[in-house]
Length: 294
Image (tube, one colour):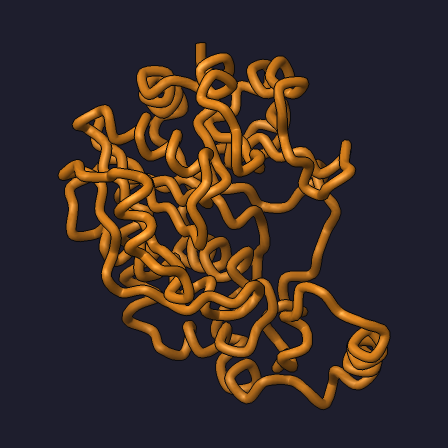
């Protein structure tokens, strides 16, 4: 089975190294990596020793800022590069993800679900967030600061009180061209047919991309909405799993949110029957990885 793993990252970590080294050891897999333009890519070449034909660092790199359209553009660049390859299935990963199951088990899982798309749409398993609010407004730059003080908290409150003044021109012009907006996890898996259809729609409709230029955290909206708009029905759904993307992420236990996973989480990860898990500490040992997939 030909699989493509699109990875977006900004730093070198053991999790990234383990994931790429393992997945690239199978010739059926292709790994495409987007390294944040702020990062020195030479370090990735030197420290990760990715000298395999099936590991590709894409040249079209984006200076990524959390929560902005730059996150979306980095993913689009990966997907467009993926379309240059012949593949059956595509996964979008972060540099903090590792597989929960072996490559052979991934193939079995995908065959079992009939190559349905593993993309989670928010439901009763998570708190609801209005996706329209992510897209409708022009968000000021202070929304994208990771560490904010009292001043910016007050600015945010003021913004929400006066948000009717910040409706984007793109949304006023074209917002109603979409029947509905949808949100879910921004890490997902798609079959080839869905990937092609989604990218044809996004690439050929500038008005759709423009809707998201001044959005906030809309990487959790743009792809989900496009897939629904296209009427794709081959979407996996089973509420017995933690989510429909089959990604093990612990938003409950803390103390970090999501929790930084460690050895005490191994049994829960294995019982989840997920395909990938995140986040892991930067210095995760390879022994822990093999304990998870054994």
